[in-house]
Image 1 (cartoon, rainbow, N blue to C red):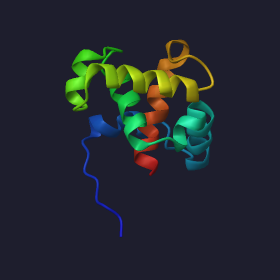
Image 2 (image 1 turned 135 degrees about the vertical axis):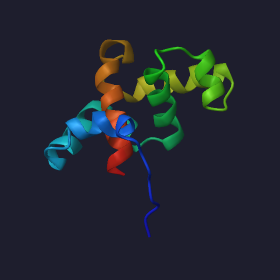
Image 3 (image 1 turned 60 degrees about the vertical axis):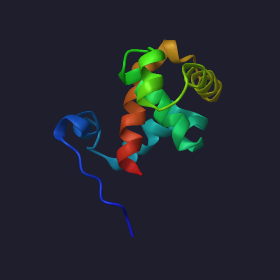
Length: 104
């Protein structure tokens, strides 16, 4: 049985842009996220929130119910799993993480 997800259009508008071909979306997500795609959901969510909230760790720590240092450590760990530094392609990673949320 699947859990029901409720979203506003603002929540999914980015994902809808890529929804023309589910195969293409899956390929994009896999290519961009690499090993991060199979990492712990908490790690992916930390990176998603970090990017969505303009790369700041302190306010993000509150939103994620985690200490700032925990968020910093998670970001460092996630960057090791990505094929390139987050600063080089944060937009792509952010889009891939938003899409990933709605694919699973």
